[in-house]
Amino acid sequence: MVTDAAPTPLEEELARLAGSVPDPELPVLSLHDLGVVRGVRVLAPGAVRVELTPTYTGCPAIEAMSADIEQVLHAHGVPEVSVVTVLTPAWSTDDITDEGRRKLAEHGIAPPRPQREAAGPVPLSLGIRCPNCGSPETELLSRFSSTSCKALRRCTACREPFDHFKEL
Image 1: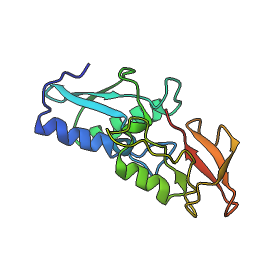
Image 2: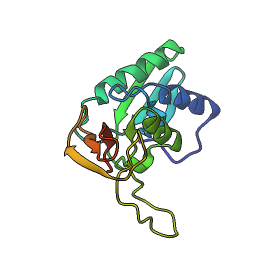
Image 3: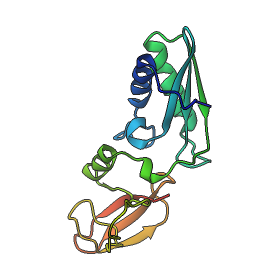
């Protein structure tokens, strides 16, 4: 497991590279945007360990993510890359960056609602807003969409179907 010690500048650069890999199921997001790269440690000269947390335990994309991280780090001169899956702490949709949420909405996917709210008033908007017209009047068509982490919804105002990244 990655220690709590502050990352070195090299580890920060390697984490940036690992995080730049596009998500195989949602290529509009990088792994950094998705919040799944948990840490990078240099174990020895030329040997790196990357910790990766899947969006859910059975995520079929974890192998592709690992292979893509290995390829990117090999291409940047790291001969020995070990990508390990860590399940604790569990990934949450709150781990998606603000930039990731913006990218989802920009590409017609309703971003997940925040689960861990900061101190302050509780938002009263329980509806999922249409990424096309902004209406909160939407309906669920299917609990699963093109990937297991998304649901298929339709806006009752503009009638357009859209994906919604489910909250976890």
